[in-house]
Image 1 (cartoon, rainbow, N blue to C red):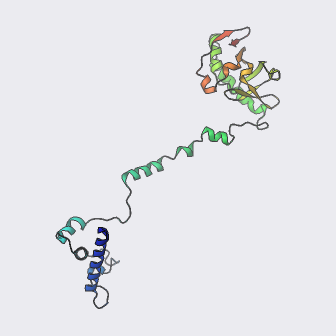
Image 2 (image 1 turned 120 degrees about the vertical axis):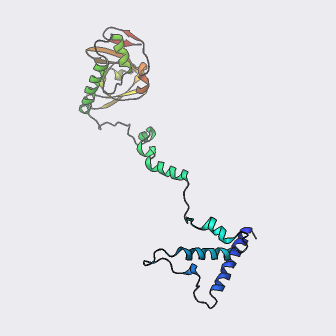
Image 3 (image 1 turned 180 degrees about the horizontal axis):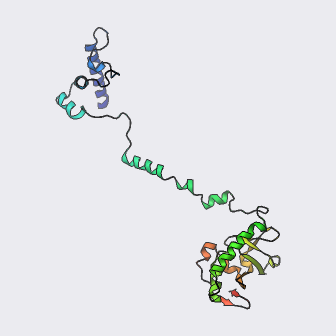
Length: 255
């Protein structure tokens, strides 16, 4: 039998002996420990009665105690508040406080993979018209005029255009390996690393592969040529790339 079980057995036996002494005739025990609790008339029973009851119970429950039961009670029991629930540690309390103050990021921000899975980046025919995209083109024209003002050298303007955001620009396909691409024009409504999507004047979306075309765009009365292979970057990456410009005829040609 383990030591823990022996201690429990001794405590139980001591409690039974105590009850037998206090309740010989089968009536209710008269020990102060079993006295009525606090009431409306006496909300706080005398502390001496509770102290005596606790000391007597400690003496009877642990008869083999070497130290004086009164000294043990005064030093380890009297005046102590004992919690019956499991008090959380400081680390757990701090973790709960952080959880309440700062919600998880996954609840406040959607990832790119989740957005693609839900089709938020997909544009379908019929969802937009050419007229819907005209305000976007007006905003891009203002942006391009501020970016490429007339005081800049022509080569500097071309470098800025190549690194600019082209969403909203009205472009035309001047040269292409695919004959059906030639002559297409429209407003760029979506750009990826390898393609652009144009909203044409007939309100149809058309996808053009960058590596097979030469695009032209007019800013401040100057026509610029953009070679598709040089634009085969994501827009965020292309803004950091430095291109080598050469002037050709009207405007700027990119090699």
